[in-house]
Amino acid sequence: MTMPSAEVAFVALGRADDGWAAVLMDGDGAEHRTQLLAADELAPWVTAVEEQHAPRWVWSDTAGTYRSLLAAGVRVARCRDLRLAHAILRSRPDLPADVLARSEPWWEARPTVIEPGRGDALFSLDADAHTASLPQAIGAVRREFAWQRQAVAATAAPGALHLLIAAESAGALAAVEMTEAGLPWDAGAHDQVLARILGPRPRGDTLPDRMRRRADQVRAALGDPAVSLDSPPKLLRALHRVGIHVQTTSRWELERHTHPAIAPLVEYKRMSRLLTANGWTWLDEWVTDGRFRPVFVPGGVVTGRWASSGGGALQIPRVLREAVRADPGWCLVIADVAQLEPRVLAAMAGDLSLAAAARGRDLYEGVVETGAVSRRDDAKTALLGAMYGATTGESGRLVPRLRRSFPRSMALVDEAARIGEEGGVVHTRWGRTSPPPGPHWRAVQDAAGRSDATSSEQERARRSARDRGRFTRNFVVQGTAAEWALAWIADLRGRLHALAEVEVGPPAPASGPVFSRRPHLAFFLHDEIIVHAPLSQAEDVAEAVRAASVSATRLLFGDFPLDFPLDLRIAETAAKA
Image (cartoon, rainbow, N blue to C red; front, side):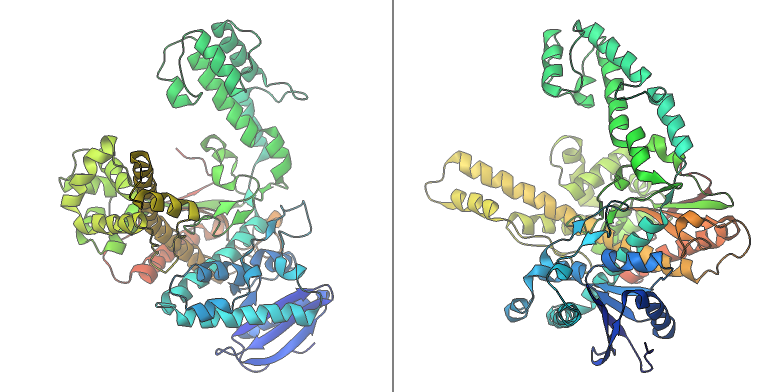
């Protein structure tokens, strides 16, 4: 096994049953040579190449390849996730037909998620299923990488797409690292929360004591000792029999009625959600060795937001945040961005008035000070209504005031809505495009355009168009906010690695060989990050978090005069006041 001596900018990796193949390339994509590696040779070879050249690693799926490298103690700085990049490029409406025709369509299939500890790998890759030998495996990766370089160059904004693909791929690295390092989780604290709210852990499948008592109170108030509170149809019938005429069993509808059954029923439903989503079964399944290891899915939402597959990483209840607890000698550096999406809207639109209202303070209070609305709640309602297309109620009443005060911002989302209503596609700052309308949507619009269209067909078409307009209106803002967040964590992950390993103080062995003595990202949710850090580096980490947010803002919006203030704290737990 030899080390490369010439300049190496990219290394493509392909895997098959008989090992690994690596193709080393220069900055123009020209190939130097191919290196064949046995499975046990991969980690030390990648370590040596990373230290010597710091290339961009090119592979089919980050989750499928990087997880095994991390487990072997190998971290890489940069990669190109071909599957994520393919999804971005295939949706571009400006991609020339001849370039599109050269893509291999099986790259579009999403990998099958396998949860950690429940299979040999996080993803079952179509690429591997289609390749029986190393030459075939590396050939598929080489062809796709070459096609993607051609595709990016053929679009109207290749520079922005390069940034988007780099950020998406960096997010994929961070996602695998967060799964492997895990979120520090105190199972004892979790159990105490459950016992406080639900009652002590029961034996078998019986309900916890406090839940059972609430259920008994509901049944007594309804005069039905056998009614199932977990069956909406049966519960609705029991409610109707005592004069509680509701259409659903949702809390907001129940609380509009006055009856002795309402309060204990709402409480029972709250308990039931906690028990089902994050109860003792969840604790046994998802928390091991003091770590919660969810599976993050970068790009899992069409706007570019992440999703999760397994463990409910994006739905940690507020009451359980006190169970997120740093290891001894470590701390949590927690930061979330204030009003991320409205600030992104101001920057995208170049709206100096809205930027001035937001600069250095709570954006909604700043809007009130402009005189556009009279209360902070009104400012929040109006801005969210503008971004989500609310046309009725309080939002519908307040949005016109924003149009007078902030015409540039309102024009941007109004134009995005118009394009969507007409069946067009919109794009984010860096060029992620919204999906086009499907055949059913077009059929509804075509039916309304016929000379013999009925009034109901025309109304259905108008409603469908408005719905799509609301989607595209929000897509441009939410998608660009997702890009800002990706740029934030990509920059932060580099800054954290640049901090020296801590040689004194207790390590965090449960975080794995790469992160046991280094600060590392442990959690990410849209506009919030949690870093697990040695106590001695807490302030350095906090400064890195701040600096990364400034860098992300500059990368997306240049010198536009707008800040993205952070609510940042250093704490033992993630509990919110």
